[in-house]
Amino acid sequence: MSRRCPSPAVRPAVPLVLLACWLAAPCGCSEEEQASTLSGSIGELRSLAFDDVEVRIFRPAAGQPAAELSIQYVDKDTGEKPAVLVVDLEGLSLRSGTRIDLSELLPSGRMRGTCYWTANGQHFHELEAGRATLELESWSGKAGAQVGGSFHLVLADAAGRNLKGTFAGKLQETIWNR
Image 1 (cartoon, rainbow, N blue to C red):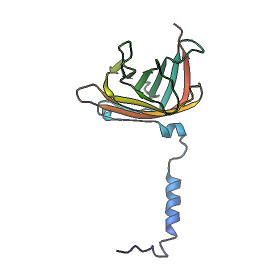
Image 2: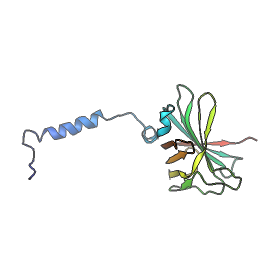
Image 3: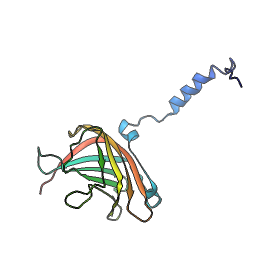
Image 4: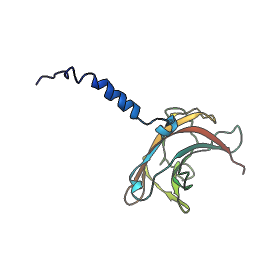
């Protein structure tokens, strides 16, 4: 079967269709809004709706290495957080391309990663060993810098529910005052 070019009457319509599709594409979205997603079978149990992502590092004192990384998906209308991922940074050197096993057991006996959500309190989920990762695609470690990455995790519940997401945002820094 041979392929034929469209008739001359149809050819001028092709650029017009492409132009119409380009004009109809969403506009006014920042790179940050386009890059952040949250999905997975955990959405069968509760809403994963969010409109902001906060990426934050926690330090025990100014100038000290970061102790934790937190990625929080926030629903500004309700104040709820459909997903919060906290990563213990003990012994890690972060840079772009770093892949972190969130289910790694630390010397303290805790897993490197913790996942929870807030709705009438905090609900923590244990992660299934070997099936939870975080990848930093862009990272500078400096407050105010644009950072991004992705994660995928399987919860250690009977149904083996999963949660995955991408994130992008300006890195915020918090100094613990203990």
